[in-house]
Image (cartoon, rainbow, N blue to C red; front, side, top):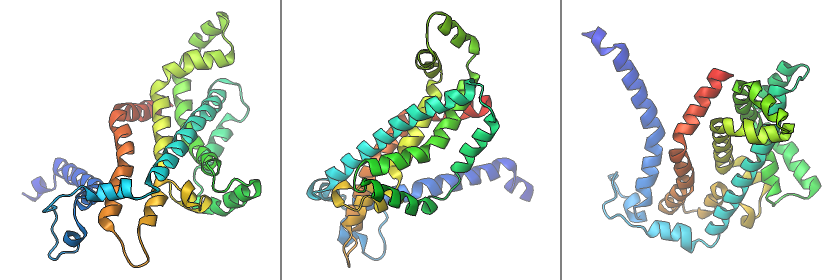
Amino acid sequence: MSAGLFSGARLRFFAAAIVVINGFFPAIWILLTSFKSSTELYRKPITYLPEHPTLQNYVTAAIEQPLFQVFMKNSVVVALLSTAVSLVVASFAAYAIARLNLKNRQLVLTAIIASSMFPLVTLLVPLFETMRAFGWLNSYIALVLPYVVLNLPVCTLILVSFFQSIPRDLENAAMIDGCTRFGTLWRVVLPLSAPGVFTAGILAFVNAWDEFLLALSLNSSAAMRTLPVGITLYQGEYTFPWPIISAALIVAIVPVAIVIAIFQERVVGGLTAGGLKG
């Protein structure tokens, strides 16, 4: 009987259940809290489901907070710009690594992997001093450039795997027809590597959208803060409006959730294919 209880299938089921609960419970709890009033939230005993659901918290968070739209705009601009630049730079870097006869190619790949292992907090002071020296604090470029640098290792490694899987004969045929190296990359390699491009782009977008430490440190002006940092302004010195904060968090999560839901198959397929082809 004990053997059946601890069978492989049951263990896998329990492990999967733990992962699902650990991943979804915080989001579900935030969602339920966003529909509660402050009175119901602090009631004892705790009510898990809202007895009188209300959308007032969303109205307060998204409309009555004067800077919420500014925070949202800043997050969208920073995430989109950093993702676009990351993909462009990573495409050139990955193509050079995959196709050009570079000396010490493995050393370059090792350096790229090693550069992604530095804890972000160790880079904070140098980045802050650099941005202050150039006068870029409290601007979009103060976040876009660091995010591009942070996203480049992952994006480059993903694209290298896909570029290596494309037969060179296709590129040679394009060059015979008059394509330059850039034309071959744009017209042949990138279209055939679409799953990898989608995967790298979504990872870069999510990383930029969720990042907190650099956004808090490099853009101290309220008008230039991104959504994750701006939501922290909702709390007062002695008050924590958790229902309103929860509603704002749900609004912040929705764009990322939509992107992942739409491109989930491409992301999973891209990561798997890249791992197999690399």
